Length: 141
Ligand code: NI
Image (cartoon, rainbow, N blue to C red; front, top):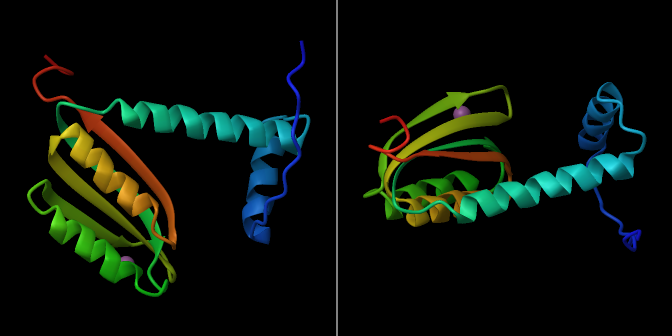
């Protein structure tokens, strides 16, 4: 039985939609709707995977953000100071005129590492966040 489809409306920056359309055309999607459905499924899978992060972990948070966004660099600094017990180091790379790449390395309870990643994700002006984690003594032994 077909699932009932619901129509929704989203506002997106032009260039974001252009880049999305380029990728879905390269990948041979029959429609933009199908590609957006897949993107949302990926988002949900990634979120579920993140909720399962627990126990002792080494975490690597990679984020790309617009450094011009008002208050963002202050917020990022504050989050890192609040969680300085978890953070072992960080690297900042100026990507281009507008964007910065930051890589934050953490060691501690997986749930706390995930919370830091989620706080960063929720900030306006943050364009990309990826969390990778490793269980020390388990994943590679
Ligand atoms: Ni920078």
